[in-house]
Image 1 (cartoon, rainbow, N blue to C red):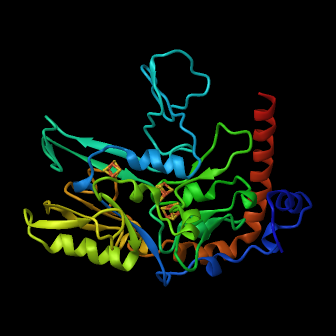
Image 2: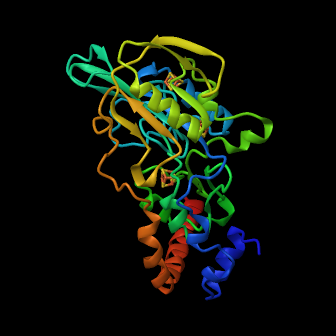
Image 3: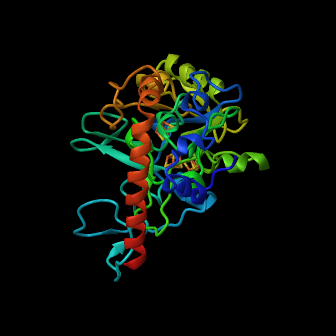
Length: 333
Ligand code: SF4
Ligand code: SF4
Ligand code: SF4
């Protein structure tokens, strides 16, 4: 049976728990194994020059509008352009992930900020986006089956017409990734979907395709892991031909290997992620916790969810009511 947002809400309003409407159980939607053709990204912060080409091309190739506007005196994110007028703002200068920003380049700074990829008196760039967990918590908690993991390539994606707006995905994500379109009349949850819509045309993640330095590269996860470990094993200062765009690309750029720290982020966190990171500055300093579980989070929630389905049913009804009221309010605004 196909569930649309409309018949999903109808089912809830009719008193029938939507759990009975054909949404696959969480356990069936989430595996702890890396899918056979799993793809992902390797972001090497030591190669990043902070140009934000990845951010721009993410918007272009995912039909996400610009719009975050930084205006002097504004205090809390998101800095959306809605309602702002005049010429004293900087156009599309997001400070956080949002419904309009699916990946973001941020900067770490310390002291005099003179030396790149250095913790003291240095600076570093880093990239935030969905990490495409091998066993994603967002998928396991979504009661409507709106969050899915592709069984072949492992990309974690979202089906807007199934979403009931409960935002459990936001609560469950250990990396704080999914964002809700608060400024939309019919809001959706937004996050990076690994540009999966481009694969059929033989294309891949736009952020990797348009990264000029090879800081972000796309490829099979097994190849990305090998590439990351190879870099870690080389002595800092060794000349190395870094692939550009994809991990198997013939296009290479010769540079010295940096002094990496902290291993590969994403190899073990929450049971492993398909996007991986390397850095010359501790991941903790960049805001990526090393204290999150090393096992898959859905294994914690499955048993619990199975026992409280009836409570969830009540929450769905409540969530749906809130969503409907919010929607009415927005419509009337
Ligand atoms: S990082 Fe968050 S949103 Fe992305 S797959 Fe993992 S749990 Fe889901
Ligand atoms: S993979 Fe695609 S959607 Fe994800 S950050 Fe890169 S460009 Fe954006
Ligand atoms: S396009 Fe590449 S070099 Fe430029 S900010 Fe993004 S990751 Fe860094």
